[in-house]
Structure formats: structure tokens, C-alpha cells
Length: 242
Image 1 (cartoon, rainbow, N blue to C red):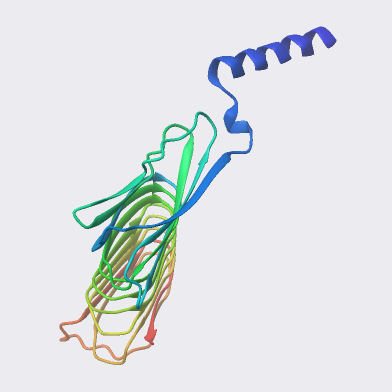
Image 2: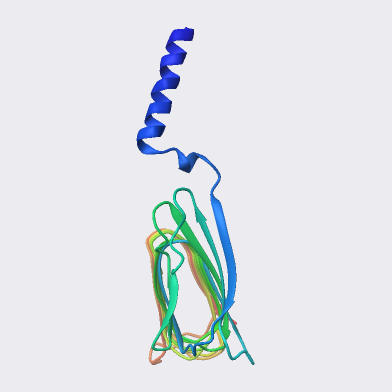
């Protein structure tokens, strides 16, 4: 038995030498905070893996980036973000076996766009949003502008949405939105509930749920130009006054 265990241990060690076992160990991390001298007019995400948080603040004139890189192998790349023609590009490309998390403080109302592969995104007090992530939650608060948010696996929530049409789509997760102003809403999920709260007014409500209840607690106007188009394959649909 000892001989068998010894051979098995040598096999594991050999495999680690050949392929690396760094992922089995806790990651190392590098953190830094930097206030940018460049003027920033918008923010774009181009990440592979990592969480992104953007806080818009009134009265703030410069952008501050707090970044944490977690890595397992070699020292990661340091140039993961830059400002190009007024666009702050937040990249997740730090090398192999590493993630980059961003926490950004910026002037209120900056538009945010782009995509990530794996990670949660939280945006507050920003302008128009156009965002896609393959796996992760999208949380929005106090967005002044149109919203287009899509994730393959995760919930989408939005509070204080105003200033334009809202599109939300997820393959697996619920959608929960609250509007401050009447506007068109398109929401789709394959698996999850859709909850929508809108200001008092007349709306044309179109719902489609293959397996779930429809609960509409607002005044429906089939002739309204403001359309709430909501669909889920598996879940309830609820529309109420905000």
C-alpha cells in the first residue's frame, strides 16, 4: 500500500511540475489607487475576468481608479488601463491565471459601455449604459440615459432609471427594474422572474411567460406609444407603479 501511495504521490508531483498547480494555492494580489490627470468623458470595459464598480459623484472633476490584481503565476501585466481620446479603457488582460477588479470614482453622468467575460458589474450615477457580460450580475442605480444590459448568467437589477429606453436580457437570472420616468422597456430572460416598477401613466403592456403568472397592477393603454415588452420562458412577470 505504501508503495502504491508513493507512486501516486510521484505522479501528482510530476503532473504539477509539468502543468503547474498554482491554481490550487491562494492567489497573490497587487492593489493600487491612482487619480488620473487626463480628462475622461466616457468609460469602456474590455475585461476577461474580474468585477467592475463605477461610482459617479457630483462635484468630482477627476477620475480615481482603485485596482486589485489577483494572480497565480508570473508577475502580471501592470498596464491594464489607459485613457485614449477621453475614453477610460478598463482591461482585464493582465496575463495568464489572473483577474483584475476595478473600483472607479468618476464625475456623475459619464456613459459606460463595453463587455466582460466573467464578473459582476455595478454602476451608479452614470450616463447611458451599453454593457455585456458572459457570466455575472449587472447592478445599475441612478442611470441618466438609455440602458442596454445583457448577461448570459446572472441577475440584472436597475434602480432610478431615467432618460431613455431600457433593454435587459439574461439567459439565466431574474430582472428587476425601477423607472423614474416613463420609457420603453424590453426585458427577456430564459429562466427567472421579471419585476418592473414604472411611474403612473398609460402603457401598452406586452407579456409572454411560458411557465409563470402575469401580474399587471398598472393602467394598460393598448394605444400608448410607451411599450413594456416583457418575456420569460420560466418565471413570473410583475408590473406595478413605482
